Structure formats: C-alpha cells, structure tokens
Length: 202
Image 1: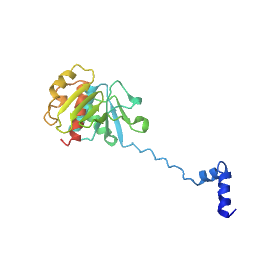
Image 2: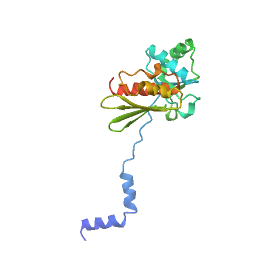
Image 3: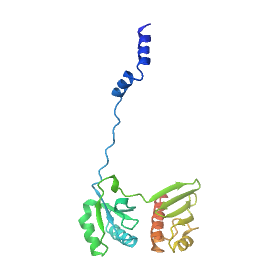
Image 4: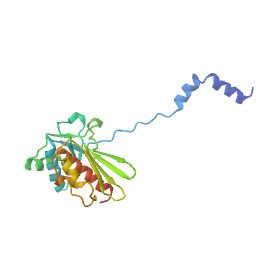
C-alpha cells in the first residue's frame, strides 16, 4: 500500500475517534456577536394611551427624536405603548412633561435585551395590496393607486366610523385618523397611516 493509501486507511479507522477530535480542535470557534449597548436610549412609561399621545405631541413639537413603541413585558403598566427617547435628555424631557402635567410613571433605561421595546409595525405584501398593522389595527392599501382598500381590527367603538371616513380615499388625501378618533384603535390606525405614507414616499 502506498503512502496515499495508508493515509486513507488511517482516516477510515480513526474517523470516529482521533480524527474527529483533531477536526474539532482545528475548527474555528463561532464568534458570538456582542449585545449592542443601549445605554443611549430610555423608555417613558405612562398610565394610559391618552397620556402617550399627549406626551408624543409635546416632545415632537420640541424637536426631540422619539418614537412610540410596544412595551417590553417586564415594564408593562396596563398601557400598550411606551415612548423611546434619547436617555441623555432625561432631565429636560422630565421637566417639560411635568410642566405639561403629563409626567411618566417610570423612566427606564434600555439596559439589556429583556428591556428592548417591541416594534409596533408588521408589514405583509399581498402582491396587489400592502397591509400595515400597528398594534391592533390593520390598514390595507392598493399599491398601484395608493387608495385605502380596507381597515380592520381593534374593538373600539369608533372603528366603523374611521373605516367609513378613510376607505376608498387616496392615501395622500385621506384625513389623519388621529383627527377623527381618540381611542387606542384610532391612535394605532394613525401610526399605521403614517407608516404607510412613509413607505410610499408621501
């Protein structure tokens, strides 16, 4: 048997023992990506949706870069929404909200994966139609015409009224749901409406 044949024989004999151990030794260890630091962000927790809406309007009018998100399970307070904000602005934001009489229940730093806020938007492409869901409300548009084809979801009493006022209208001509309803459903539909306009460059 030549050297090549002997090497092959050794490979066969030891494939469940020494060779596998050697292979494991030579194989590079899989690198674990570090968890990104979130020390620059915090969450404002409120008692109800109305306070979130008011706080969002106040903070955006002051020029702060904030966004409304779903709360992580660890800090849910009964409200389905929180406001994510730049943590370095904590003192100023707290002062502004207290002066406006809408102080948060908690101000929580996003210090780890368990405190990550939940994205409110879920997008589904049906080919001709695009559906955007925000929290419990769904808004569907026809992609070619940008007309609102359907509104569904929620359980608030103003949903039928909101659907009647928006369905069948072009996205850039329909009224903002936030101007028509003030329930959680109306606010969630407003978020879906704004996300639809953003995605359609309106």
